[in-house]
Image 1: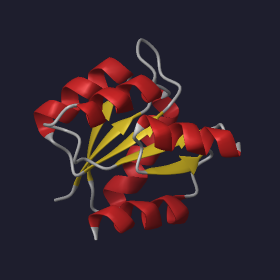
Image 2: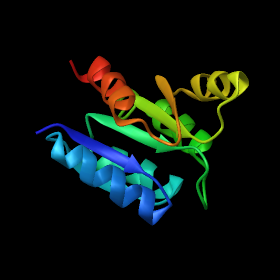
Image 3: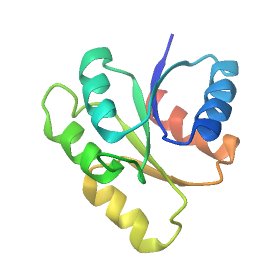
Image 4: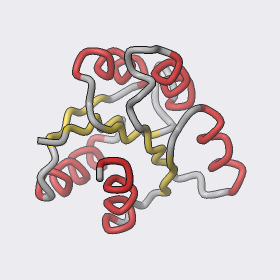
Length: 120
C-alpha cells in the first residue's frame, strides 16, 4: 500500500483529507507540526509527503529544508499545501525543496493528479 505522510496542524483539515485519501487506497500517517514530520519521514520512509507550510513549532518551509537536506529522506517527494496562493509562494515552496505545490482549499482531483504524477 502506498504511504503518505500528511502534515497538517488543523485537526478538521487533517481528518477530512485523511479520510478522502484512505478511500483512494492510501495509507496515511498524520503529523501535526514540522518537528514531527521530520522525525516521521526518517522513521517510516513514506512514499510521499503532503506538507502544510503554516505549522507550529517548525513551519513547513524549514521542515522541508531538513527533509530534503537529509540523505535518508531527500528522495521522498514533498507536495506543499498552503492557503497562500501567490506566485511567489509557489516559488518559495519550490526553493525550500518541495517538488510540487497545491493550494487550499484542497480540490481532491487536482491533488490526486499531482500525487499520481510522483507515484506513477
